[in-house]
Amino acid sequence: MTIHIVGDDGQIGLLLDAAAIVQNLNPPSALVGGVAVICRLAAVHRITLDADTVVEQSDTDIVEILTARADTTQTDARTVLIGGAKVEIIDVGPVDPAVLADQVDDNRERLFVAAHRWALDTAETIEVDTYPPSRVRRLAVAIPPALAATKTHALVGRRPGGEEKAGSDLTDIVALFEMFDRDGELTGQLHAAPYDLGQLVAGQLAGFLGDPQRRTRAVGLARQHLGSAMTLERIETALAHVLSR
Image (cartoon, rainbow, N blue to C red):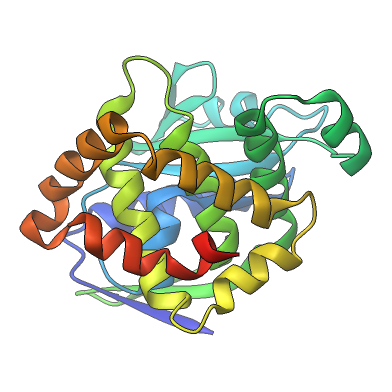
């Protein structure tokens, strides 16, 4: 499969190039986050400045390998700049569904672990072309339902000081459900996923929409990306299938 991304001003291409460098190394990794959503939508629907990458936990530290490169610097514990492009490393290890259900009480934490594990396990290798000019890269990219799950965690799990990104999270979630859940297909994939992901995603989205303060703030921030087109009615319509299960 080749995906052609329209409207790149060069930034997305730089982030994809950086992600490709990570993916050419061991351990296995896959693209998630806003750049992955752009790949799946085949359009730059909003600005993003980093490439989130899930990486299999290993005795080999991928950050150490990357920082040995002349063009790479480490800016945080799991953040690097590769040729000026920011890459966030998210480590994921093995997940035992029974242990996850019995020992992780917080549903947001459970969603984080489950969503990122599933995103790596189910990622698809696709060709991504940005233009102009045309440049094709082969990348492992999370599938849409896994992106919906990871983005839902991002929306509800932002730590104090990180709420400003809630607008981009909500923009991504609405875009994913509008494109891939018109007939409930994405919702069905979530409910067929392991770790009770369907229930976790639905519960967290329902809780978010039921909190007027958080919902209003996120909608306001999302309007920075989509303007007045982002409304509560639009959000509820996009999420109708997942909220009704």
